[in-house]
Length: 322
Image 1 (tube, rainbow, N blue to C red):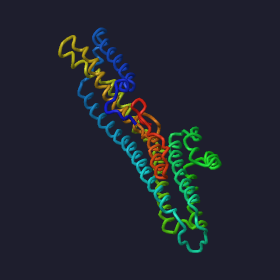
Image 2: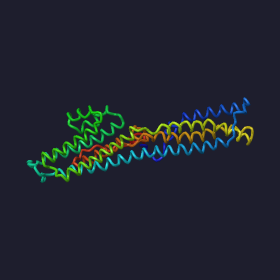
Image 3: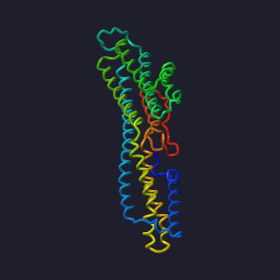
Image 4: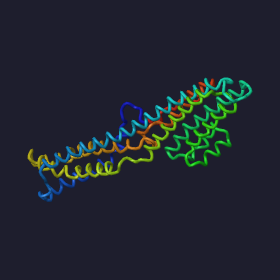
């Protein structure tokens, strides 16, 4: 996610230079054909070109709204992951505290060391889940050993790494641990168990929402025709402008070049903005900063455990927070 207030010029140039070069060369070619080679037939009336421009602007505006909705939904889903991560950790720390009344369960009192171990396991596995969701969305499973493995037992990490959808199996293991805490250890009563399972249900919903955005591409009919219409308008624009500028004087027709390039660049930039917002989980400049969010979750949860040796928050790299 780009975090600087204003875009730097090199970022603007990165996304616009190809279009500017093409528009400039094309407009110059049109002016040369019209004025030097006297090909007057290439000029067309301005009215249909302006009408097309209005239609294209409405179309790409509609497409960009849809693209932004996908980004914003992705950010809301990760905001939910942050909130339920805190909820899960508080429940793990405050519910799993001592032997509770559980019908039919005869369990010995848990020592403080056992409770601390179980707290750490539940919380650390959740941190692993957050990072596993991120890696799964970005298709970066090759980073498992450094991003997820440190929060799991080595055997569990190796087993989860082999799964097709590791985050789902991590939540399943959380559910298995809750069952053991309630049925075998007597450390959860039915009410507490149900509450923690409800939190897990919400985590599944948030994971599924992210996977839905990731696995359902932006409708190609909107994205493709937006691109086609913008370039069609850019192709017709100098043909409609050249005769209008010639009316101002014999040399004014060359003003077609800067004005057609400027208008074409604006339309093309709007189309690019929508295109770069279609998929918010690709680790690009305008995507949801999942790595930074996961680090913030890790800091919050480990601090809740009472740890003091915490990692630092991630800083933007070249104005981009990943």
